[in-house]
Image (cartoon, rainbow, N blue to C red):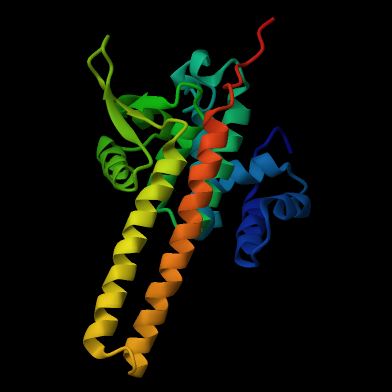
Length: 245
C-alpha cells in the first residue's frame, strides 16, 4: 500500500470508527495508519459529522492524481508564514484545532478560518490568502469573518503597503471574546431578574428565573475576575520568539 493512499476499505473503517465515537488515534491503530493521516482524511472530507467513505474515496482518487502539480493550501502562504516548519505539520495542527472547535460548537467554516489565523506566525491573513489556503469561496470566508467578528475573536486591519484588508487574531483574542461573552451573559441575567419580578419571585416560574439570574451573576463575576487576573499575568510575560541559528 504505497504512501498514505487510503483504500475504500480503510475509509469505511474510518467512517465506522467515527460512528462509534473513536478518537483519530484509535481509528489510526485500527487501520494501521498514522493519526495525522486519519485527521487529514476526515477534515478534508466533511469533518467528523459529515464524513462519508464512498464520497471521500472518489475525491481522494481525483485528488491523488492532481497532487503532484497542485500546491497544498498551507504552502501557498509561503514559508515565512509557516516559520520554516513542515507544511504537513501545520496542516495536522490546523486540522486538530478545527475538530476541537467544531466539537465545542463552532460552525465548521468559522472553525477553519479561526484555526488558519491561530496557526500562522503572523496572526493575520487576507481574504485571498484564506481562500487559497482553505480552498473555499470568498463568500464563505466573508460569512465566517462576520461571525468571528461578532464573537470578538478577530478584527480587521488595513495593510498600509497593499491597502488590502487583513483579518487579525492577536494575543488578546480569547480574553476579549470571554469579556464579550460575559457582557452577553450579564444581559441574560438582567432579563431573568426582570422576568422574575414581573411574574413574582414567590411563584415557581419567578423563583426559577430569579435563581437563574443569581447563578449567572455569580459565575460571571468569578469568570471575569479570573480572566482579568490571568490576562494580566500573561500580558506581562515577554513574548517567546523562535530561536535562530
